Structure formats: structure tokens, C-alpha cells
Length: 218
Length: 218
Image (cartoon, rainbow over all chains, first blue to last red; front, side, top):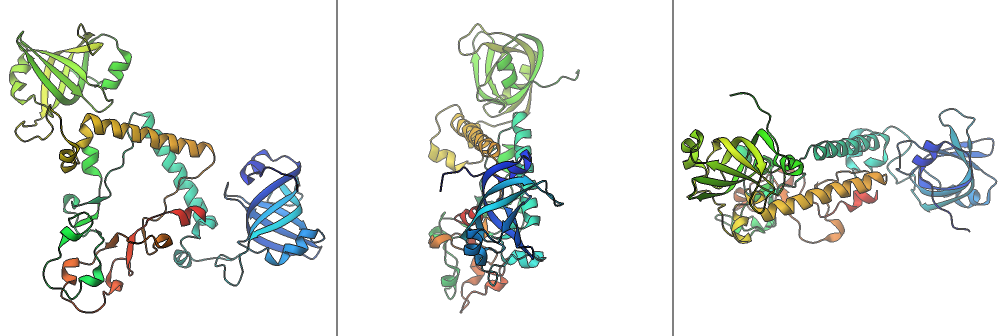
């Protein structure tokens, strides 16, 4: 197979122009099989919020080979022709010539499926949350905000600095702190007397800081 | 006194132009008294690495009032005339008309003085370190690197995201972790049996993450 450069979906949708042959890689968000002998895949590669619609003719060789592995969450590589879409909801769509699956996502075990997932459920699979629309959108907004704030202050002559995260202070007596320790809580039990913090990593009782205010003001 | 806008030292040194009257605020880095009836102050306001040299005639009213408080580390407000400097080491200097001290720094107690401080000593006063030349320079380089890296990735379509800091995983069995807990280590002592982590803040044994790799790869 000849070497091709991968196109990001963001670029494809921004350009919105037909192409004789392009290569797209991403995760299958949904798959819908049509009785007309076609499958519709929604592919997302993380480059933007939107998916690219891919039409797979059931007669192409690689469909037969990979159909059983093309599920929500599986990782695919598609080569095809980019055409104006007759359907609603997208301007261009990809007519697949070759579909390959790199990573499978068994629908019996992969937790993100084409249905509504509650936030409570997503909290249990926090590492996969960014693949959902809601968290993908939240992450994109956070990214934009972080960068805009960084720009805003840099342009006005402020410095971005990293204040200590682990501290022995409780800032303004903020009360309860998250203690940070390498001492083994389990082995502390059953021993009488004071805890010997000189044996702890920093040689003192330390906690997560509650504020970088002191450093900011100095 | 009429209302004046404060000028940042960075701007003054960049412009490098004489001014009839300007207002500068900052911390005194050094003070040197001349037998000619003048004092030389080096003022830094954090806007840049360099200081502004201020010449104070001992005959101005406010010098008499504030002389006893003008020490290394004290916080001052100076109004004066900006002129080309005849001395070496600076292009412009400020001839003070009014000097006021807002915050004193008793030389008997303020730890940063005009002398060499070892890194070991500075570690003990970590909150004041950024006021030294070395740490000010380190902070400025870090700031520039952080912003450049942020720009680099944003321009190439990457997203800046915040991966979890507190986790129940130890990434790839990285070994010892910093445990994060709100359980009181001291009160754990003397109690037999297993630690009941359901009583801990997150209801589980948690630690500082050693890597955001998992989230990065998803």
C-alpha cells in the first residue's frame, strides 16, 4: 500500500472540499447498518468536537474482513474518497475504499456505548470520560480558557509561576488539610506514642497547600 | 499631592528617555550613602530583572523623615526626575523629589541583606527566594518556557488538559507513593487492626499521581 499522510478531521471539515483520496484515523463513535448494503460510521479523531461520516459499502473486501470488529470505541483507519454529502447533518462524507481496525472495543465490555451515560456512571470510568461529547466539550472549553488567561497575563507583563504544592503551612488556619506522607498508615496502627515525622519523606508533617497566596504576594 | 500614574521600571529602562516627573514603586535592593550628601538606592519592582538607580539628596524633606526606614527589603514610593545617568551600569537614573516608605524591613530581622546567601539558607526562607537575583532569573526563565511550550502545542492543535492529581492507581507499579489523607496519623496510633479507608476523604486509600499518561493516551 502506498504511503499516505493522515488528514485530521478538523482540517477536513474546515476545508469542506472534495478529495479523490484521503486517509483518516480515529475512533468509531457510532455505527449504523443500512439495508441498502451500506454501513454509516461516525469517526472522531479528537482533533475537533465533530465527527466525520464514513460510508462503507458492504462489498469492499476490507469490510468483510473487519465488520465484526467495527464497534463503538474501536480504533479505525479509513482510506476513501471525500464527497459532498447528500444527507443532512454534514457537508462532506467519506466513501470508504479500505477500512482497517487497529484496536477493538468489544461491545460486551467497552463501557461507552451509543446511549445516554449518567455522570455518576462516567465518574467510575474517569479515564474514558474525555471521549464523551460532554467531557470533550468541557475539556475544550477549559483548554481555551487556560490559554486565553495565560495570554492575557503574559501580554500585561505578569509572570506565570509555580507555587509549592506540598507545604508545612496551613494557610491562614484554613483548617483540615490533606496530609501527604510516605509513612505507611497501616503499619502506624498498634504503635503507641507520637508519630515520628522525622522518618517521613520531608522530615516534617506535610500537606497539600490550600493556597499559593503567600508566594504570590511576596 | 496630585494623582500620578505609576511607571513600571521595565518600561522606564526600555524607553530610556528623560522625564520631568515620574512615580516609581518597588522594593529597595541596596542603599549606599555618599559623603557628598546623597544616597543611592537600587529599586526593583519585579517588572524586570534590573533595578532602577535612585539618587536621594539628603536635603529633601522626605529623606529626613524616611531615612531611618530605607533599608534593603523596604517598600518605597519615589517621585522624581528621570535623567541620563553619568555613572556606569545604568543609562537613566531617578533624582528623587519625594521618597516615602510603605513597608519597613528591619535589617536586624529581614533575612535578605546585601551579601551572598547560600541556597541552603534561602531554602529555609522559600517564600522570599523569588526576591533574590538567582531565583528571580529562574522564575523568569520558567515563565518564558511555560508560555513558549503552551504556545507551541496550541499552535499545533493540541489541547491543554488537567489530568487528575489525586488517584487510587499507582501508575505502572511505580512503587512508593505519597499518600494523601485526611485521617489523623497521630490518632491512628495505638488502634489495632486495619485502617478503615472508608472514613478517609475519598472513601479509599489515595495518593498523589505519578503520571497523567493514562489520561493523555485515552
